[in-house]
Image (tube, rainbow, N blue to C red; front, top):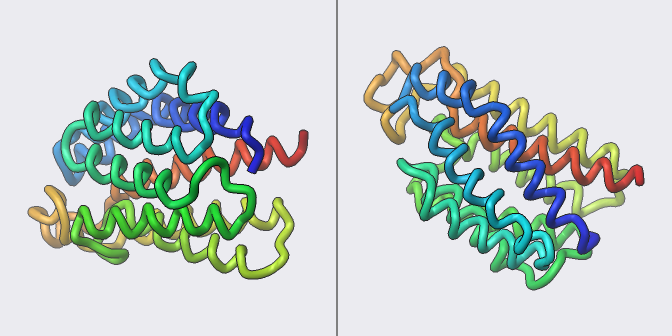
Length: 211
């Protein structure tokens, strides 16, 4: 992965959270505290303030700094969960990942950290319902020759399918779990923010592949 990818990835992540903050808040108002969009925007606004310093770092170091920023700035459960995701990803591979299997290893470590932090797994109406299938799709791609267009398409599809599956799930974690069966019929806001970030990264990788 090219060194110049760090800045564009961070910029794309910040932009997508800012653009969808109100939507994320609306999703969370239906089954949670109603603050997911606001909290995520606050955290990524803080990330944006440090973009100048992040852009010149290897991706691994930048991800760790992003994670620490989110832990400090994002309220609720999202800060520790997203912080754990990015910090673990950053620690998994030193420098800039040069091969797809390294990227897959980074995401695997991040997903494991989220599972541990949240004491949860896929199927419980959380961000893991997007991250786990994306992780599986990435590892499958890393084990065979794959065109870039196919890779980003597969990752987007995994994220989209994972998000949509949360609609018919009953939440068993977080504030949404208090609603029991009333949580069914709503998309999970954390899964939606994860899906948005997957799409943002795919867009950057796709764009660099065409340049």
